Amino acid sequence: MMAVSFSAAGSASRPDAVVVGAGLIGAAAVLGLTEAGLRVCWVAPPGFDASPAAAPDAAPDWDSRVYAVSPGSVEWLSSVGAWRGVDGTRTCDVIAMRVSGDDGRSGIGFDSHDARRPRLAVICESSNLAYALERAVTARGDAVTRISGPVVELRVGERTASVGLSGGTTLRTPLVIAADGAASTVRELAGITVDRRDYGHTAVVANFRCAVPHHGVARQWFFGDAVLALLPLPGDLRSMVWSCADAHAAWLLGLPPEALAGEVARVAGGEAGSLQALAPACGFPLRLQRVSQLVGPRIALVGDAAHTVHPLAGQGMNLGFGDCRELSAVLSACGPQADPGDLGLLRRYQRARAEPIATMRLATDGLFRLFSSTLPGAARLRNLGMGWVDRAPLLKRELMAAAMD
Ligand SMILES: Cc1cc2nc3c(=O)[nH]c(=O)nc-3n(C[C@H](O)[C@H](O)[C@H](O)COP(=O)(O)OP(=O)(O)OC[C@H]3O[C@@H](n4cnc5c(N)ncnc54)[C@H](O)[C@@H]3O)c2cc1C
Image (cartoon, rainbow, N blue to C red; front, side):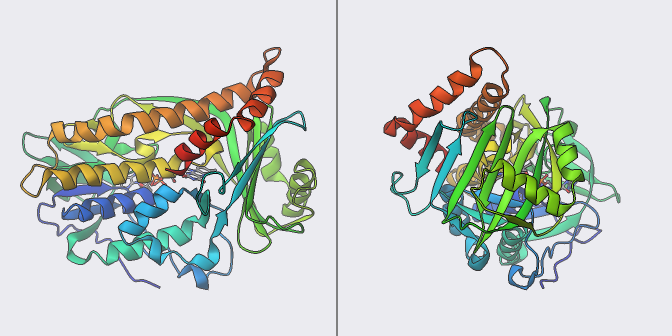
């Protein structure tokens, strides 16, 4: 186990950047910024345990939070020294994906072979990824100072921003990165507004041992406004994400694990055979969030602080890694003498991220609306649409390329 602590009182003398938020994207932002040569102060909430982390191979259970990590994210995480810390015995390559419509006939198939790549994504537990990111941050040595927050105040001046923590510590820095998640305090203190829509849906997640082997194929079923995904894990394990109306989710979450396993097996139509639950399920309420701007004077938003999308495409965190990659590239390109919080520089980051974020928001929200529509003919249209896309190899290749970035 790694012993790393965020100190209560700050000792960072004017870091080049302050990163607020100790989730996966906060850690990735710290790596991206130090890669660009910046000295970073990393602020975690009080009591945050930076050693998530028994090493994953020592963990007896399977984390019910798993992510489909895109090849583009894997490549960037490798380049900043984080991916090598991932325990590969606990990840599973997705080599194909089959998506089914709600008429029992239509569907789309995606194959890594068609994308000319060895895999479409890697399924990785959250704790496995957190452990790898943490090790990579630790390897940055003195370039990173850790402090526990939370942040309660933000003042932006001509040359510096001041970040006030609840214990009375004030950090002065040219650049503040908000990586503090969907309910970002930093975003709010910076006066950046957010347009928020609750889907009225919850994602129910759980892991199962399955009688039928998955062969590295991810399965997804669209049933009206519900989406069920079974993602491959090593051996005979699969991870479920079932996004459905809140009332349905509450019912699923109230089932005993073996009853939930039976319900998933029934709805998956025998695809996975009989299921054995590994641990109780958890639920995550779903919402769409769009911010008015990604940057402000001496502030940049990354990860869920910057955008929250429906998980049906498994892309929210990949978008966040894309933010960190781009911010790192912009700061690296400007050279060591530049002011990292210069608004013109930060706007370059904003411009570069605008399209990928908007595309993912429109794609996931559009699919959600199409599948939840009860308008006459909508069901036929979406099932026909799936068939058309499936028979259009160029379009499919484009879709795969976007999801794999
Ligand atoms: C069911 C589900 C499945 C998903 N599957 C996928 C997938 O397969 N692939 C994918 O790419 N994405 C997926 N996502 C999206 C992904 O989970 C998120 O995009 C990602 O976790 C966001 O990480 P983050 O670090 O930005 O935010 P968070 O994980 O919310 O982390 C924010 C951190 O900031 C800290 N914090 C908050 N306030 C303060 C403060 N004031 N001071 C200091 N610290 C603070 C918090 O404690 C936390 O540690 C999924 C989402 C859901 C709901």
